Length: 171
Image 1: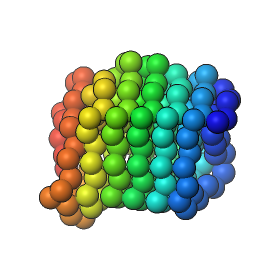
Image 2: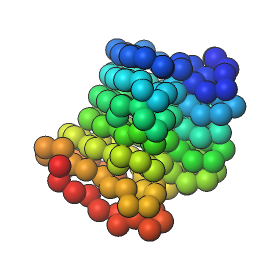
Image 3: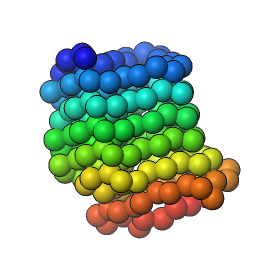
Image 4: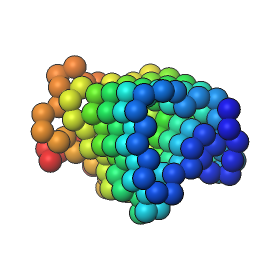
């Protein structure tokens, strides 16, 4: 696996399109053990697995403030670990999930599955976000889960937060 300050596996500063494959066994001393989507970047992850990565924040994926929302389609984020927030994903720039599974991640802080602190999280289709340590989806302040189109009845999403309204709204 890779090792870096931010983006142990991949540090994206431009445009990144991942089609299949595995990002696994990477480590970041800062943010984004598997992938770091930096400010100004555009990232799409489709039919991929982000697994067994470690970081201070965003064990699997870190999305920085000012990054375009990361589009994730039919992707699994599993068994990643963060010392603080966002075991699977730390979302500071926005993320759109479509048919994704986020499970078995661990945050020693909050947001074992996803830590959301800016721009909310949008969901389409069937998404499973469960069995994460340190909560499944942690909504910081007034962040929301926004349903784009129709959310599939097979979706399972556990939500917690501080001062969050914990609302799922239709977008």
